[in-house]
Picture 1 (cartoon, protein in one colour):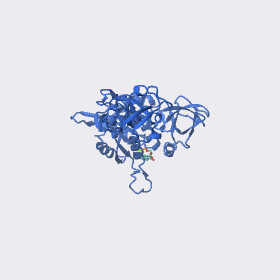
Picture 2 (cartoon, protein in one colour; picture 1 turned 90 degrees about the horizontal axis):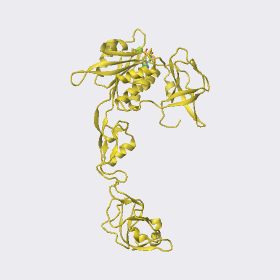
Picture 3 (cartoon, protein in one colour; picture 1 turned 90 degrees about the vertical axis):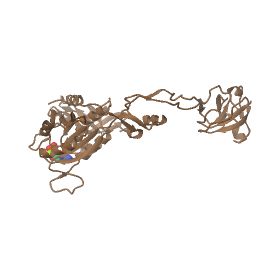
Picture 4 (spheres, helix red, strand yellow; picture 1 turned 45 degrees about the vertical axis):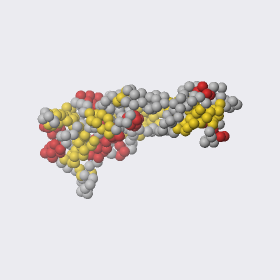
Amino acid sequence: MISVEQALEKILGHIEVLDVEESPILSCLGQVLAEDVFSDINIPPLDNSAMDGYAVRAADTRGASGKSPRILRVIDTVTAGSISKSRVEPGTAVRIMTGAPIPQGADAVVKFEDTDQSGRGVDAPEVGILAEVAPGFEIRRAGEDIANGMMVLDKGTVIRPAEIGALASLGRSTTKVIRRPVVAIIATGDEVVDITQPLPKGKIYNSNSYGLAALVMRYGGIPRILGIASDVEGSLVARLHLGLDADMLVTSGGVSLGDYDIVRDVLAKEGEVVFWQVRQKPGKPLAFGMIRALGNGGGVRKIPLFGLAGNPVSAMLNFELFARPAMLKMMGRKNLAKPMIEAIIEEPIENTDGRRIFARAVVQKRDGKYFARLTGPQGSGILTSMTLANGLVIVPEDKPGVEEGDSVQVIMLDWGEEV
Ligand code: AMP
Ligand code: MG
């Protein structure tokens, strides 16, 4: 049986980066930029004021102080977004608001607090300057953030809100990104019923397809739920054929050793099995392979298929461990690993059969250290062990277990916020 690392290596060896599309910037969150982005404007566009104050000639302020104000004639007021027609000549000043372009002739700004404006009123024809300023003082230079011609964003950058803001600041409404993978999701099992139906005796609701679709969305893909196949090969093949234009196929159930476990056989007939079973717990019965489909040009296209186990914990966990990195690689992402931390385990975990255990755990920070405790019963059918967990504690395959107080590695499932 292959290890988790070997399985991931084989999977990634079969995954290719998807093609590029031009998209509206706001829909690109989390996607990878597929072009170098240059600016064809200056930001800010003109020299402008960093403060509310008076635009002056610095030379006119020489020697100014509270005791010895320099009186200047106020010839105009300029606000952000407009341009003053006046020219600041010796002995004059223009009232100026933050962000407004510096009028001609001025080379510095004196903020309101360093003038006697408050005593005179805002409409006074003159103002006393109470502080000396050097040329350039409180002036934001044209292009000091982004200069015309500058490369602003590199190809390969993951687009976050800051990048979307930067694109908008350049006046870009669309950009080139690596497109999102479409992931087709098929449940299998005669016992499985869709959530829109009444639940007959002995049946269970299809939770897997929805949990998996949510994972696809969380990691930036486009899920397509393709219903439920019964436990006969023809039914699964028919559903698979509905998903042949997807970038990835994910099935749940039917991948163990039972009489009705058809996924591996179907994979072998419709493509190629790359591996089956991984030395881990839960999630051992994972099948991965490539399904044959017809490409656009009439040639053969191969679509990766993840045959996940039916038990909801195994299905979600193996999506996180294996399908997620594959999706991210398709999207052009370079860093494929979830964040991993070291924590102190607060209870023992036994490892009886030499597989790597991924125990669902709650991680908390106390006194600057991380502590992990199990969510309760760890059966692979206990989906609440996932709803309660924020991390997966790893017990290595070559260890008989961990003791209370040991240091363990934890894969953080939700590392958006502090724990
Ligand atoms: P299997 O891997 O097909 O043997 O399925 C193992 C168990 O997983 C089944 O007995 C069901 O309890 C559960 N299961 C299978 N498919 C689903 C599904 N789509 N949603 C929720 N539970 C499922
Ligand atoms: Mg089944």
